[in-house]
Length: 394
Ligand SMILES: Cc1cc2nc3c(=O)[nH]c(=O)nc-3n(C[C@H](O)[C@H](O)[C@H](O)COP(=O)(O)OP(=O)(O)OC[C@H]3O[C@@H](n4cnc5c(N)ncnc54)[C@H](O)[C@@H]3O)c2cc1C
Image 1: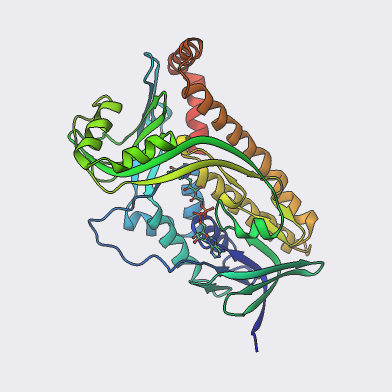
Image 2: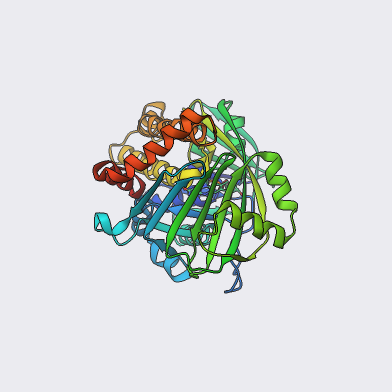
């Protein structure tokens, strides 16, 4: 006999974005099931560092504070950055942002993904109205006029008024719901690693645009350790990952113009193919997509998960407002409010990143002059710089 359970909302995917949505609906009158396929993050040795990190905007930080998880993240480890330095390998154009110029203590934080996930997932478990199924994966999804029915691999059946797909870029939920995606292949793979440099990083996020793609060094809490995200062609990424440590360090130093002196150590490397994806719809009756399940974006501006947190916040607010107005939370009319609020904004960011990638990964002389002049001009025009910084902070 299979067990059948009823919830108002079932969230598939307890990563950063799915867990954030659960927390945002915590302590409400809604009953929630959070389904996560992977084992929860286990304690890690103090001196180890996650390979995956995220640049977190002030908007996301404020959201974390409202969810009651910001202090827990600070207690684990977060790294504020106060300056940003961006320059073009082919020319002299550069731009420098400093939080002091806008009277802010910093421009954001670099946080290990495991810190974010652990804080949010643990917090979700504190709420009386949230049941967590982990590790657990769904086997079948049915949508009908009354709601969604999800069958878990162990045979448990979960019925709900609303099913949310927060299951990442290759979303199973999106596929089951027959929602298409617009793909843009950036033809980039990101190589990530943690590196130790001779000179301190000065709490600065560094980004150099090479003709092959951007190379970012993100400052971690140790003043000599940075997390690198080196976007390059797929073949080049494979080659870089196969180099021995000394050869890799030498190539990295060269690519980064030794701005932080020698690269004295680099840890294990991993590769992530980068694809732009945008779901043609975020919602259907009784179904919504958030985070990477709805959109994936080039990491060059460090925006992907910040957009996902904005989705989670917006969907939670939409659902709580509908609940307060005694409107059905799974109706198309309710869910369209979320889609209208988020899809255009995410599309704008996706298009902007596509354009940036085209503009900077190109050695045509005309484009070279244009982007170097653009960088230099922006650097000198305080109102435009301020606009950029305000946007990055939100
Ligand atoms: C190299 C790189 C650097 C990046 N840097 C930044 C940055 O600096 N700033 C930024 O904002 N963004 C950054 N991003 C983007 C960011 O990592 C993603 O936007 C973010 O991970 C999306 O979170 P998510 O919770 O939507 O999806 P995911 O992180 O993919 O989480 C999905 C979750 O769902 C679970 N799941 C999947 N399928 C199932 C299933 N069938 N059943 C149950 N559970 C399931 C998974 O186990 C996982 O826990 C970067 C991305 C890359 C590749």
